[in-house]
Length: 279
Image 1 (cartoon, rainbow, N blue to C red):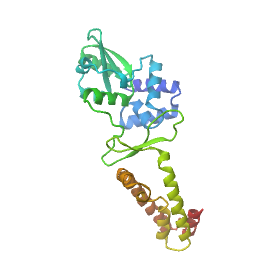
Image 2 (cartoon, rainbow, N blue to C red):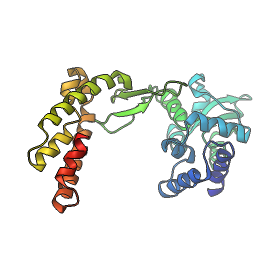
Image 3 (tube, rainbow, N blue to C red):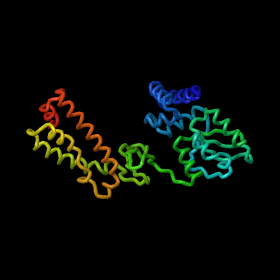
Image 4 (cartoon, rainbow, N blue to C red):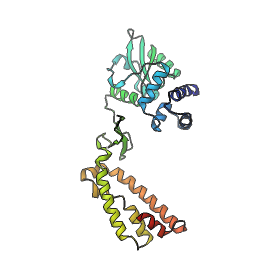
């Protein structure tokens, strides 16, 4: 299937959505892990799904469809099993011509093999339209399984910071969501002032104590510049941000082990470390 991938890649490069170097990197990931090229590019953060979908629509001259606004077509859904739709990343939008034509949403309309399989299964003439990978997944959940799509799809206990909007000017529009999809923090500005104030207090205390002590004490002072969540957040926020705290603790342990190793090997001098910390 190298040709279809290259065709989509060429369209994105021609539209200046990505460059040649980024395309080669995305194709290397595809060769190693599989999956659709558009999803890989989106996951790499090279372009938004909407930008990719629009470029493919214009490059191929194929209609762009917004699946969040389509009406459920029971007849179209009946022509395709949900498992096949999920496996192939396609969604039957609607039936036309008295059931003879099926409008099929795809992230990659150049995937002729999938189009042929859908045509054989549905016994219809298939007309592909373009939609994003996540759009298609959400439509499958909404129309086949009667489930509301969840923004965060992580392992239990995990929470992530994600960009929640691509509206111009909303450069600090982030949110932390829990497994239920409930927003914990929407704007980075909601927590920055509290964290900054606490950081300043902890840094001042560390500076006052600096000058004497063991290497372990010095490491404790470095790591303590990140305030304890219990000192900054309310009990409700603490509960929701528990997974974030666990990840921070893991990072602190790694940093501690690395610094101790450098000190033991003589690669890093304690006085130099203390000086850098105070500066």
